[in-house]
Image (cartoon, rainbow, N blue to C red; front, side, top):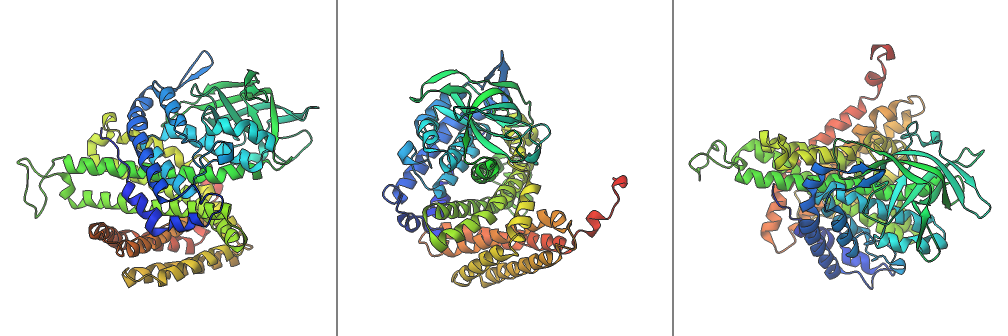
Amino acid sequence: MTSYNDPITDMQFLLEKVFNAEDTWSSFSEIKDHVDLDTAKAILDESSKICRELIYPINHHGDEQGVRFIDQQVITPDGYKEAYQEFSEGGWIGLCGDPALGGMGMPKMLGVLIDEMGYSASNAFTLYGSLTAGAALCIHAHGSDYLKNKYLPKLYSGEWAGAMDMTEPQAGSDLRNIRTKAVPQTNGSYLITGSKIFITGGDQDLTSNIIHLVLAKLPNSNGISLFLVPKIQVDDNGSLLSENGVTVGSIEHKMGIKASATCVMNFDSAEGYLIGEVDRGLACMFTMMNYERLAIGIQGLGTSQAAYQMASDYAKERIQGKGIGTKSTHKSGDPIIVHGDVRRMLLTIKTMTEAGRALAVYTGKQLDLAKYTSGEKQVKASKYVGLLTPVAKAFLTDRGLEAAITAQQVFGGHGYICETGIEQLVRDTRIAQIYEGTNGIQALDFLGRKVIGDDVKALTEFIDDHKVNLAALKQTNPKYISKVTQLFDQLLDVSHSINSNKATRPALINACAVDFLDAFGYIVYGYFWCLMLDVAKSNTDKEFAQQKQYLTDFYFSKIIFKAECHLAQVAEGDESIMAMPLNMF
């Protein structure tokens, strides 16, 4: 099994050259005094060291041993507790948290890269901190000052963990059917009773307390409210008191991420505290969900990067066959990287991964603009966040699984063997397409709500802005710029066609959503390759620019055409999908 090293050079290139992080951060009055490129580079270097030396070494063993449930206690794999303590003490969980409450106050542009490193090193381990950061975000956005002051410092520090409790056996994606109840008490608290399933990090032995964010219904209410429910009650000084009626029913036995505790959680008159307004729980939870969906997209991205590195290293070392037109350097043959099909697979993973990283950082930049600016700039950034979040979640995770499977194919028969590590990557990343809203639901959100929901206005604005950017590029092949521009126009044409038929063909959006999202993803990746190449060719590092030229050429000669395929499928509509009677399935 190979070691892991993060792509620091590419990460710094995106921050410094492509997305002008320093200029962006200097315009944010809240963070400009403690964030600059030197700080970002130091954080990237330290995070890479932590992931390489602390997290990656426990990944394989964590998968083999898995989480155990003994005497009603959830026990994480050997080494996890010590690693989590060291990770927490480094301040990594509170990286983007409010400095006034113990966070580091770093921008999301940087945070997405730290997340990628973590997921590359270990999907399962990184989920614990990710859910905690997401819970803290939700409490910070919607909780009272009392709740924020009481709970956020210990969530940021990692002393306590967070969990998101939404799903129930009868209510998966459709949360209107949840049955968990919240009964108001005279002291302003609520007693929460019910069961939740599939709760990531619902319980573990890493932290002294777990803060659950639980969706529940009040008596005689059709709405859903959100409650903070600690596993162990806490006094006003932050000291732990008694158990709070929060117990584990069981843990799930899963295909992958076996070191991540996925729990059935039971709430038996557990004392909870309202977050936000009554019956507005979903709105509060979606503050967390939007960040978590981006984080899960980055899980796919991290998998892609790890898969590429494993497959590339293997392809350079594995001697098998003789390359056509090459002079063998080994008596028994050549390393398989000389073979065209192996190179095709590696280039596919690499081009998709680097464009995916650009999408992640760009989405993080829009989140930062929405958070730290005001007026028209904030409004536009918020619209772009709405557009890009479902795309980042779905497109990055779909391509992440494809990257893992493609890398496994590079290994051949050895890719099916546990010792190489690549088969774990395939199993671990499969869940990313399913949880935090399946990718089909992400596509419905993207096309139905974000594109058609406002009569294509947000998408039109997004495309117009990016076509202006394309027109300003000076060192990218004009054919590539023209191709992306043409595809953007085709996407708009299809969007307006769907919009004009939405009333008379109600199944159209549902039937076309996945292809529409994929078309958008491949087009946007083409845009980012044009942008990255133009910037790279303006740098003094000629070898770096040459590599970007090779990758851009590959993307436009072998991959961009997938956008046209998906657009053609969208244009065909829903007739063939909806025609066959139910009894014939």
